Image (cartoon, rainbow, N blue to C red):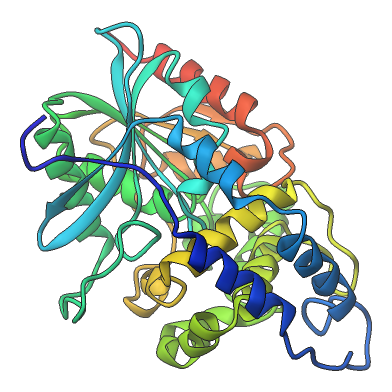
Length: 375
């Protein structure tokens, strides 16, 4: 590593934690709106119970200690501070693997994944620009943080660490960055593993050609969901007016928590009006909310929407692709039109945030994909 890479350790001042608890205790609660639970948003009773736990029993220091078990660093690339984990495998010849977290998540997503992966890989896990310990500078850079700009930053980071060949993995926002990185430097990336998105329908009638009637119905249903029919409709407003939302997130930890909880639940596809399942440990949910609050990055973390970078992963055939949580075979057939799919896993998973809900199976699937690639 070069002198430009500096060791980092998470050490949140106690005064910041005391301030958080004080704000939680002084929350001004709204009344319950008429209508079915969850169909109007996060229920007051649910959030009150979660906030009571956050203010009392939840232990940020325990989360901090779990993350500090792993070596962390910061460096500056393209004017942006980039925070990252660099966890080396005991085998010096292990494949380097850069893993990119999701939105609206953070490095907390990988709390239980870093250890298992480092048994096989040299793991590099950066915090996306504008997230957590990779905050935007003040004043913020006016150039858009496109997915391609992030991919170029990751390529520079891996070169700075001395890695010439490596694998990539990503979830959600990370699944956008990972194939873009492969397309950018295919001579360096040995393979791309993502947790879904590739092969998702766009609504183009041409996508239905050659599919059975059953597969057509399934693809049309998913295309309708992805077009924004139903659900909370959060994305258009977030893309258009993120600064307005950021005031609530910067001033109220409960507003920040409510928004994050709703995204996690909605992404896991609960039926409208019904209480959603709880596939993710609430300490991880609160760890993510705490990190957003303590670093003041709730607003800046939403750049994937207001920069128009949200969507589906690009197609690329430059390197092999492996998919976990990819969906039925109909989606694989769509994905294969633009990607060199060599691995496709469709087991039932409990959550969109797989690294949080099922880190063991996800680590095993990543190992299986990269072990199957030619040497």
